[in-house]
Structure formats: C-alpha cells, structure tokens
Image (cartoon, rainbow, N blue to C red; front, side, top):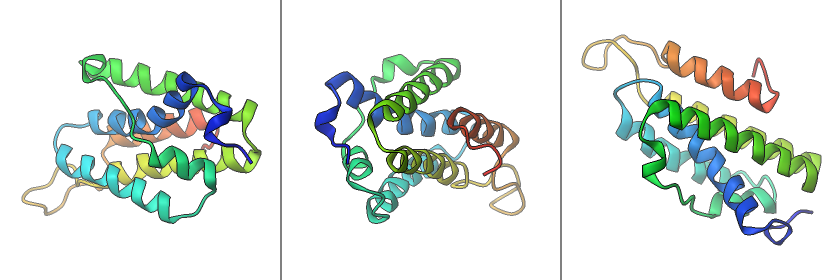
Length: 153
C-alpha cells in the first residue's frame, strides 16, 4: 500500500493539483456556468472521499491543491499545465503505487472532469434546451481520457 510519505513534497503537489487543473481545464472550455461547475468540483471530491477507493486516493482528495491563479491567465496555460500535471501524476503513480491505486486515481480524475462538464447545461434559453456537455467540454473529456489511457469511457 502506497502512502503520502512515499512521495516528496513536489511529487505530492503534482498528485494533488492534477485533478483540480483538469477540472479547471473543463471549466475554461466553455463560457458560462463557472459557479455551478466550480461547486461541482467540490462535490466530486466529496464523492471520492465517500467512495473508499483506498488510503492513497483518500489522502490525495483530502489535501487541498495550492494552485497559483497567476499561472492560469489564459485557457491555453490551463490546458498545458493540466496536461503536464496529469502526465506527471500518472507517471509518478505508475512508478510508486500499486496498479489498483493508479486505476483508482484515473477513475477519480475522469469522475472529476465528467462531474464538472455535466454541472451546467450549455446553450438553450432559461434552462430549457441546450446540451448537458458542450462540444468543447467533450473534447476536453476525450483529451483527458486519452492522457489517462482510458479512451471510450
């Protein structure tokens, strides 16, 4: 079983920040709904804590990400940082964690991205019509799934 102590401070920061950066990437994909999408991020973390996916994931979701807003001035910066952090996090886990822990982390990141994408209907009028997930958000979900090696989920 892998623990927080198995990672140095920089590695731990990467593991904690990657899911939040992915969520921010989904939020930045489409204008509107930012408040709902941000609140859904907290809900996704709460659900992961209740999901009992293991001690490592519980420690990760219990640690608050420390993301400097100055690093995220434009959507392209969010995309680049989210993708880099996610690749680094998966590589770290593949080196240090069990396959089950790596898979739990992958599922958690996908759940966070999906929850945020579904938090706000895109388009429509006064909540009528519209899409649950915009084309831009779906593209981000597809990119995240590909980065995680989980196409088609």
